[in-house]
Length: 160
Image (cartoon, rainbow, N blue to C red):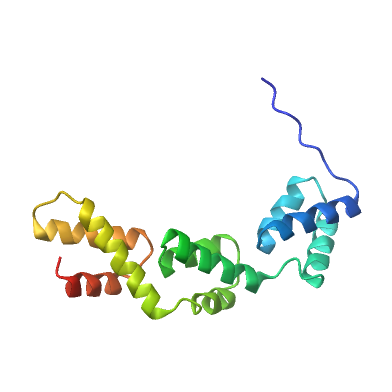
């Protein structure tokens, strides 16, 4: 079957209205909005003009996006700081804003989430050898974006 053709937007006012709706639906990074505008067939001058207007009208706020991203990925998906930082870098968020947003994670909540993650995974492991078991748990914590030293500390304290 033929794929439907994408409708190109040529009127800047129509594009602005659609972009406002796109940003109002959920927090977006500037890069996400820029990509969407290019996908709609707009040219560079119009894209930058719309981005500037969206920022001016507070539809687009990179700091607000970064904080929402951190909160969502930590509380919903139980991602660690490393994985969250990588995700924000992929969305072209500035390093200063990434650092500021990561500071919103409470240290005790972070350690609690890591402990719960390890305990949950530990219940599903069938490995009998304690060294292999510990290694698998540490690797799992690392794959979820937690720092190696924190994972080792939790494993040592929980004596799994």
